[in-house]
Length: 338
Image 1 (cartoon, rainbow, N blue to C red):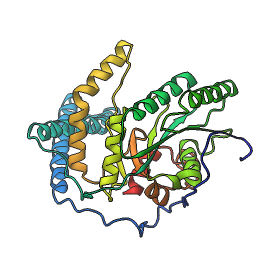
Image 2: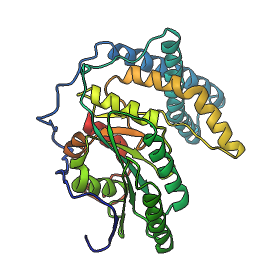
Image 3: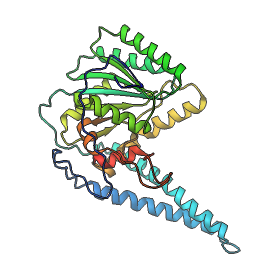
Image 4: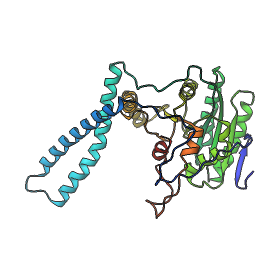
């Protein structure tokens, strides 16, 4: 055991190499299957972004018409530029959702890539990443998912890892107690639960995942990355595992997260908006992004070998915020796995 690292019930090491990537050169994984060619998605992307630019152009024209009387000052020009940039993001979301609604109404679905007729069972690790979170809530979700998976006789193997970067010693002590209690309560279940805490959260979440990959990644085919407040049903976990097993070209499959157990009015409004637009937005995004969709950092299944081979993030040269650790790592990891 390394100094400064707390471990509970961890398996033997099965390290994977995770080399740092160089953004100046193109990386090709020699063992990765050939990329699928989706001939339809470029046309969908062109249609969506043409509509986005048209909508943004009309909105900017109206804004300039409001500001123009009396002549445009430097401040008004700055307002128009900022308006165009912010409206562009709104337009992308709006057009994507409208396009997705059309996909759903026409009973269309995002194109499927090549499938294996008889996929082999896969070993999947659920990685619960936590940093100074409430231990009782974290391990309550862990126990709920373990029990749910135990009641579902699937053909895959699952393990749960709680990967802690907690720096508060009082919270860390409670984490260790909660981990021991949860492991004892579910000791006879088919889903093993492991707990590891790093004293120093080197490289934050990126370093946390790298540490897991280079220690135990070789045990598993896939990993489902979860935030400390994530809760996923066994049906969803098995469906993701099936999708990864069936598609040898899939490196990452992103779900559509939803707010649950909302109690405040604001949270309920957010949950309603997600329920109303989440699915149509996801269908639209999947259709126009094709095989190159984004990763939102959690609630997604990732092929461990692909992640380790392609998504080792380097430290950028220069001073922060443009140098050092890559902060929006999930976007970059999705691009590298692609």
